[in-house]
Length: 336
Image 1 (cartoon, helix red, strand yellow):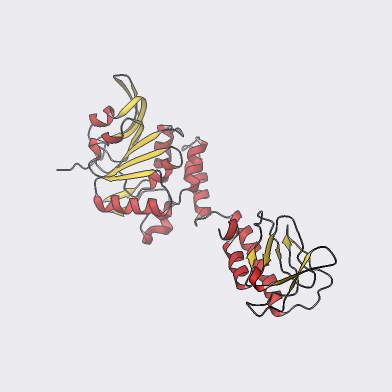
Image 2 (cartoon, rainbow, N blue to C red):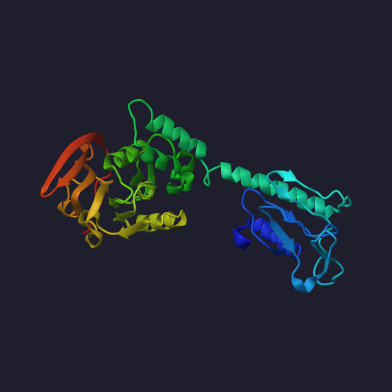
């Protein structure tokens, strides 16, 4: 925002007229008032433009308002008219009928600005809105998929998946399948991301550990649902790229570590939930130890052709596990 919370375009326009702002507007109502033969008028929810004191002379007007002498030679002259764009209504003093090209230009600029603000308010900040909507409706809510958690659906509908795939594959970002992201790794199928997230049952106060950052997309989805996300990626270039993308996109509650995910992140343990997006041949004991009592873990386990997704729940020293879906993830890598 610009001056006093006003849209930057309005601030620049005011500066171009050599004016100050007297008070800020309450969007979406905007009023810009120029001093002229009719003096300075008071309109609710307005932005008032005036010359700095050194550039004007003030004298009383019969109507009780202050009028400004336009004969000052310092700075550009203000148009002798009053404009108000207030709740889509223009009010022009009937006593002013001579408008120069600058006046009409300003009026058109304000109309375009108001239109732009309305359009921006109605549209998402990122592209591919229709594709995300279609993905949710056809891949997540479709019969046989049946993702029901509304918070998960909302996150999937808002996180820009296309920002986490290579530019050359951007147009395929919302297809019903995984995509390569380099270094022999993939970004998981949207349904799998949503399903694993729903099974994890994330709470707003949770602190979650993710093993296998990959593109950063799963971490971004989780970040909309929990307090903090800690994610580990063993392939350092992927970790750096994901960290940069997450930061660029404003996912500030995600912390990325380049390292061996098998060992977890003991400095930040215990975690309320752990999600693993690469498949070890057994459940890593360090991850079980870093899961708090009552915590949940979703993890694929097994060889490439025979993997099962498991849901684990820790109760004291006991860990209950349940196979919930046959899957196919890249194997978990270990550091030497």
